[in-house]
Length: 67
Image (cartoon, rainbow, N blue to C red):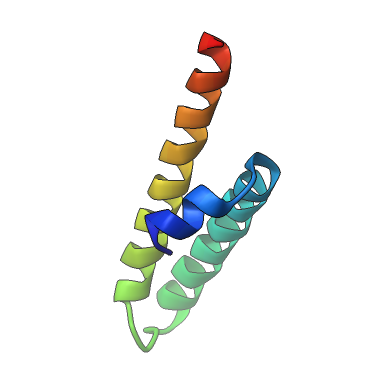
């Protein structure tokens, strides 16, 4: 997910997307533990996407608090 795509999301969509990605990460980790997944770099990609989403969420919260 690109930063430009993240900026286009509303705050509610952002929170929902964080939840989705965390669930996806849990599933990927479980699948990888049971048997090796085809592309283990997907786990890293999902973790970075979650970090990007959380960063944007924090920016929005701090902007709202400063207003």
